[in-house]
Length: 317
Image: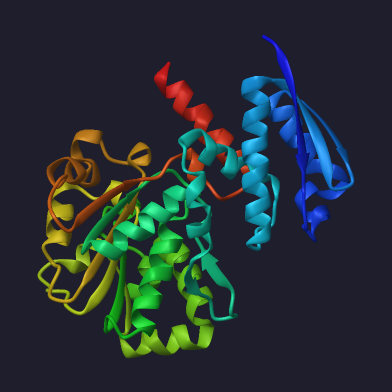
């Protein structure tokens, strides 16, 4: 295969160091990933390699330039995200990643970090019920809580309700010491953490005392009508079919529901998982969205993506 050389000139760009990375680490990463040679000098460089790889590297570097100009960090994880977007043909959606989803108590802007997350946010916006399905680290729970807090602050809902199936205790929590909150706290720590980051600890505690935030195991939803609420069912893969039907039929007027889970991590036999059954039964119904996040949407440590990929490959074998 014939090699080509592409000259790349960077004009009127102030933050070359951020773009190239510390000691040109971003340039080296792209060079190794696409198996091309990149020779940088000042505000320009040359890319040499196979036509396909060289053009792909230029496409990703163009996207990286746009990303940094918009305020992106240009970390290795960002470059990998842009490579994934290039592979998926979604680089034209970069600008949408900079839209602010929510703001934490300390003023930090929460934004989508992948196109998959953006699709998830969009589905929540346009549907009354949204299923966010994906592996650990894809931000499905964190973003759900961020959207719930935003809706509450905007007075779109009157309360936030968070629930999880307590499979480990068989939903029979009586043998555990303490009151109801003490019994379910161990299962709901990820939700506590996200809420406290969004509201701040003191505000979170006041809203909890007033009943504007309610956190309870899934079994305690039975017999209720949940109106004017933003409701999140987390770890839904561990809900039975009966529990899932019960939960979804609790929804009242002016409410929004997000169901999150990882169908590969259920503690139930697959044929009994209410999440797996629900996404089969409810597919295609108006105002019910189903979004699948993948390893490409993992935003934790880069090893998490590799771990997920390794387990998926082992499962296929």
